[in-house]
Image (cartoon, rainbow, N blue to C red; front, side, top):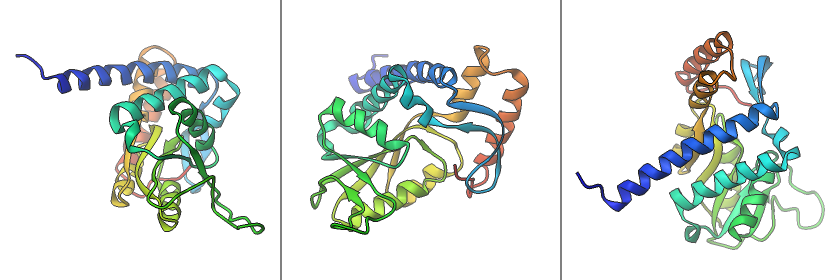
Length: 228
C-alpha cells in the first residue's frame, strides 16, 4: 500500500512529537519541574505530583527546547499564516509565548488578570486589533478555566480565539471544557504518556509510578478535576 503525502507527514510528525516529549520530559526532571510527593493544588485537592514549569525559565536550554516544541506544534497543526498575534497566559505561559513569538516573528500580547487602575485600564497588554486571530499559549491544561477566561476577554475586545498550544495536559477534563468554549487545544503530550515513558527509562520509581497512574486514571474520570 502506498501512503499519501499527508499520511506520511502525519506519521513523521507523530514520531517527532514523541521525540520532543522524551527530550522535554528529561529536562523537566533535571530542572525539578516535576515534583513527586503530597501536594495541595489551588482547588484544595491533593495530588501525588506537582508540575512547576516556572522552574524552566532559569534554564536557557530547557526554555529553548520547550519553545521549539511549541513552535513545531504551531507549524504542523495550525499554520503560521492563520495567526496574527500570540498571547501568553500569565504567569507561566508568558515566557514561553515570548520566545515562540520571536521564533515565528509574530507580535506578542498578554493577558493582565488584574485590570490596571491607572492610564487606559486595559486587560490586554500590547496591540490587539479587531478581528486579529489570536493564538493562546500556556504551560499546561488542568481545568482550562484560565484559558477560557483569557479567551473571553480577547473576544470582548474584538479578537478571535480558536486555538491553544500547551506543553502538556494533566488529563483532568480541561480539553473537553476548552472545546465547549470553541477553543481547540494542541498538546505536546499527555501526563500519562510522559509518566509511563519516564518510568520505563528508570527516571520514576515503580512505586511512585503506580501511585501516579492510579491518580491520573481517577482524575481523568472526574470531569470537575482539580486546578493547579
